[in-house]
Image (cartoon, rainbow, N blue to C red; front, side):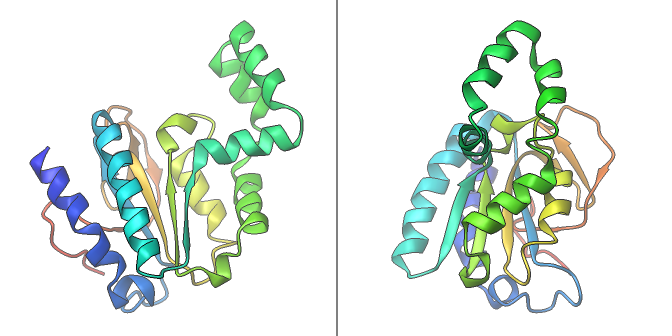
Amino acid sequence: MKALQHRLDLIVDRIESPKFLKNDGLGNEIGFWVFDYPAKHEVLVREHLELMTSRLHGRGYKFENLNIFQVLVTMLEERGLFDRACQREKKVGIEAIKKTLSGPLSQEKVAKFIASNYDIEQMDFLILSGLGSAWPLVRGHELLSALQDVMGSTPMILFYPGEYSGTDLHPFGIINSQNYYRAFKLVPESGNESKY
């Protein structure tokens, strides 16, 4: 847990660096960053995110810390589907409701919802969290791919409950997946800056 706390303590410095804010040194790569962490430390990460968000707002940065699960709830509520989806999940289970909601909550629709409800171009950066609560309705690599079309040059951090190897996302650190996605680790386990 000390190693994770050390990595959490380095986040603000990384966000405030030109490499992050101006995408310096990324070449043609998009400014997508992943902060992975053991899912068992979700509460610690959430508490740190709250403090960090307050601190960064206090420093005058323009950004949003969007909880993906809350985004899904809002999307369903706006269409009058949330209560029905909850009732249906009780009857048919998560796999069936996942299939039912795959259309209304496609990763592309989630990305478009974020783009249409938040002025991404005017932000210094975007933070996404809450992916663990939204899984398996939202998959990290699919969401990142969909967001490429709407983020422009605005940097984004995905707080990821699992492991990110630098190429593959492994949900919760226990699900073996081949979910390739190219992003940068915001704070690697060593605490050193990511190499580009």
